[in-house]
Amino acid sequence: MSFGRNPHVAKAQAAETKARAARDAAAHAQAWREAARQWDRAASREASDKLRREYTDKADAARAQADVGVGSTEPDTLPVLNTTQRGKLLN
Image: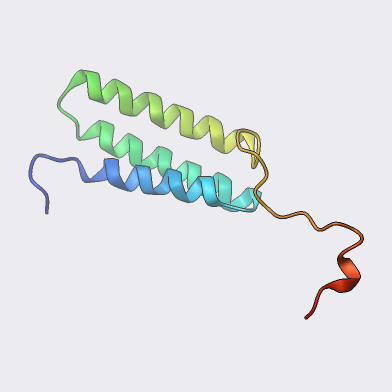
């Protein structure tokens, strides 16, 4: 157990990283909602008003990302096959 640190902050950051790496819409939305839940938990355990507001804002932003969908804020990272290369791929 850590002393003086809010463990939910690291969990929320990890959930955001997972959400950014999600490839389908369901995983994307679920990961962002998990991040929002962790930010809410971090805010509820925070003594500082400034940090509590910051964590609450991050939770709201994560919920907004969950509602937006996959690929709206990041470029597509999946490779695109050229139509001329399709017959040349090995199994």
